[in-house]
Amino acid sequence: MDQSDARKRWAMLALIFATRVGLGFQFQTMGSVADAVASRLALPSAETGTLIGLFLIPGLVLSIPAGFAGRYASDRVLAALGLLSLAAGGAAAATADGFGLLAVGRLLCGAGFVFCSIYFTKMVADWFAGRELATAMGILVMSWPFGIAMGQVGHGWLEATQGWRAPFIVASLYCLAGAIALLAAYRAPPSVSVAAAAQSSRLTPREWALTLIVAIAWGTFNAGYVIYLSFAPRVLVAGGVGAFEAASILSLASWVMIFSGTLCGMIADRTGRSNIILAFCLSCAMVSLALLPQVAWAIPVSLMFGLLGVAPAGLVMALTGEAMAPARRAFGMGVFLSVYYLVNGPAPTLAGWLYDRTADPFVPILAAIAMFGLTLGAYFVFRFVQRATR
Image (cartoon, rainbow, N blue to C red):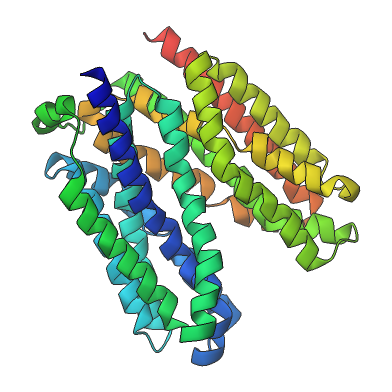
C-alpha cells in the first residue's frame, strides 16, 4: 500500500511539473519576441517592457479571490482553468495588431498564472505533506525556470523561422494540452478528497502569522534573485567583461539551479537538517554576490550562486505546507501569493532607483544581499513562531 501510494504521489508530481512548465514557457514568449514585435507593430521599448511586466500584475488583485474560489471548485478544475486562461491569453496575443490586444492577452495569461501558482502548490503540499515535501517543492519550483529555458531556446527559433506570432501559438497549445491532461489524469489524495467540502477561508491567528512570514521569506528570496538577474551583468561589464560574455557566464546559474533545487530538497528530506542547509546555502548566495566585482572569478561565482545560493527555493516553499491546515490551504495560498507580490514587486524598482542615485551597478547587488539576509531571518522567525505557538 505504501509503495502504491508513493507511486501515485510521484506520478501526480510528474504531471504537475509537466503542466506547470507551461507557465514559464508562456511567460517567456514576450521576452523572446520583444524586438520583433516592436519592429513589426511599431511599439516603443517602454510598451514592450510593459507587456512583459503585465503578466505579473493580476496577482496583486486576484490572489485572494482565487484562493477563495477553492471553496466552490476542485483544485484540478481551478488549475486547469488557469492553464486555459494562459492558452487564451497567448491566442489573443498571437492575433494582435497593436498594444491593446497584446496587453489583454498578457493580462489573461497573468490571471491564469495566479490560479496555477496557488493550486499547483496546494496540490503538491496535499500529496507530500510530511513526506519528502522539500524534495517535491524543489521539483515544483524548478518547473518555472525550466519553462523559461525552453522558451529561450524554442521561441527564438520559432520567431526566426515562422514569425513572431508562432511562439504565442505554440505556448498556447502547450497550455491547452496541459489543461486537458490535468483534467483527465489528476486525482487528489484520498484525505483531501474527503475533506474537500470543508474548505474554509478562516485562517487561525497562528496560520495567519506563519503564512505572512513564509510569504515574506519567499518574496525576499525572489527579489534577491530578480535583482541578480537584472544587475549582475552590469557589474561584470563594469569590470571589463563583454556584454554577451557576461550574459553567458551568469546564465550558468539559471541552468544549474534547475537541478540543484531538486537535489537540495532531497538532501534536506533525507537528513532532516533543513535549517542548517538553508542557512549554509543562503550564506553562499550572499558571499557569491559580494564576490561579483572580482570578474576573474566570474564563472565559479556564478556556479556557486546557482548550485548553492538559490538551491533552497524548495525548502522555503515547503513552509507553505506547514503554515496552514489542508482545509484552509487554498485561501491561505491566496494570502501567501498576495503578500509575495507586494514584497517582490517593488524590488526591481528599488534596485533601479539605487542604481540611478549612485551610477554603481554593485549597489543594487548589495540590496540583493540584504534580501537574501531577510529571507534567512524570516525563515528562522517562522521556526520560532511555529515552536512558540505549538
